[in-house]
Image 1 (tube, one colour):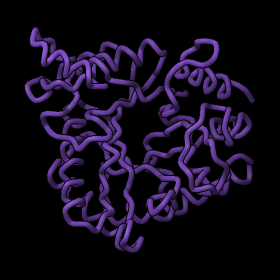
Image 2 (tube, one colour; image 1 turned 60 degrees about the vertical axis):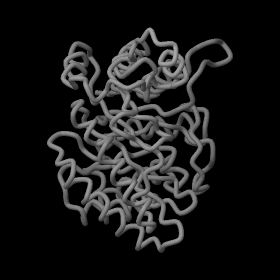
Image 3 (cartoon, helix red, strand yellow; image 1 turned 180 degrees about the vertical axis):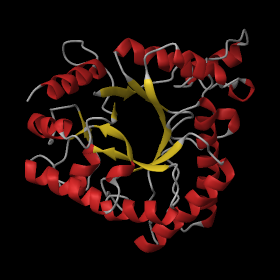
Length: 315
């Protein structure tokens, strides 16, 4: 019934990311297809495996990159990734788009650059056979929220035209509402879905962002109110993935700070309620919590996955 996984590092290439997900005991996985903090280019996409070279210059460059992105992706056959993934028990593979993309911007140069970046990454995700690519809707900055929303519609529409996806959905992620970020209100997500009216457009629901945005689902009444609003704006039926993150900050803080499962403001009781809700428990859930090991040397991803499974099994 439950499907738990994590965002995994692709240091060494995308195939290494798949191996890493298996080693952690994931059932699903999320990856980046290029560096999340650099503008993507066809030459900068993460390849299936790191390129080996006798050249000291290339070797130095490769070791300096966190994702093993030393060329090679453009000449690869993406079918190799699909075939390799099919040999595992991993399901629901998705990507997360570059953090720099801002389709809500009224700066024409930034908007164009954002559309081009989304096209590169969405096309790569489509070629790899991923189920979806997650995108932050964007920030309206100096424009009005209404202008920002219309800019998002223009940007997604243009990217759809250029990519022409057949499989990979674009999943708009709910945000915490920090600064001028849009998509923190369920109503905003519903408006985007209705206005764009595309089957390959959905939502990734982030639990940390939802709490920070003011949706207090830690009580039965609060959870039902959130579900009712998701249903009212026809967002619930379009949720294709869940980012399973606890929140360092409390409800309504509008601050996006992820915390380990059960150790943040959602807490164990809040997680039990959320995980047992039939509206969510069939969806693939991906950790985006801090990497590394705890004080006992236990990998945090392994610990968080175990926490999710334990909470899902408890009543």
